[in-house]
Length: 342
Ligand SMILES: Nc1ncnc2c1ncn2[C@@H]1O[C@H](COP(=O)(O)OP(=O)(O)O)[C@@H](O)[C@H]1O
Ligand SMILES: [Mg+2]
Image (cartoon, rainbow, N blue to C red):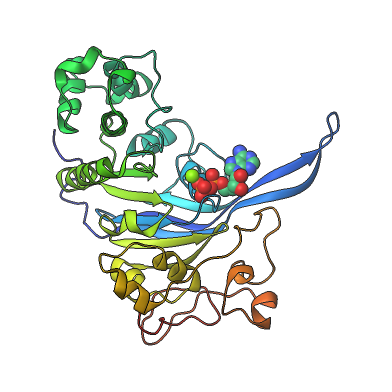
């Protein structure tokens, strides 16, 4: 397989740009005359850039809007508002052949390898399915040969092309999902919790495979996870989401060494460290309570109901991103600062 990136494509330039994207799911009541009585603010003004060849980790507790964001980028959901561009082309306005081209260029790996593969299709048909949907991207020669090549690329036996998903382990099924995502030679892959359903012992193998494929094919990843420990190794930058918003975004080092948002600090505090004493020294922050409902998020700062630093201003004023002189990575907190001893 040849790498999709041509020499004119510069590593590090912006490939995907997301600007103030919003997705509100209407809540309706009434059987005959449905009346909208509210909205689930699943994604509520998200902006970021993905650079060519990098991995952007997206982290946050369950329900904070990560999958909705992924589905919006894949055009599986229609945004309420906002804009996104892939290689400068408007992702949300594209239709017809333009949309098909964009879709080919951005693929997704789903969370659950047990339910995302059709049990009645052979792996050959599953991996080859994108060629049926995009005949113009189908290999010139034998499709079967190309599918076998893809099996080999993800570390599976090419001779198993006629087997069914149930004949593979969870980790192998996720490799099948990855092979399918690679079939059309995309440049961007959105990985929605690709290892969350797998045994811890298998997680590292799948992450290593993704890294190896990234190097080989110059891929850019959005890598979604619900905790910070999973994404550290693979991410160049990390965005932390809470109730539909990015609260802090920075390089791997900025987030893991110098986080300034209390929510990030709380998530970090839950990450197991090799030296438990060091963790005790740092002090453990325990998040109390559940994530509030995205249908009725708290006023001001959405995190304030669970934040130990919250003061009056947090209830009345939404914190906009602050760039501290000492460490100017964006953090949406009125009291953003590095935790002493962090
Ligand atoms: N199709 C939908 N209709 C209504 N609400 C939805 C829909 N999809 C997701 N939600 C809600 O949006 C919020 C964010 O969900 P999701 O994006 O799946 O979060 P995450 O992936 O971070 O766990 C949740 O409150 C969820 O219930
Ligand atoms: Mg999800």
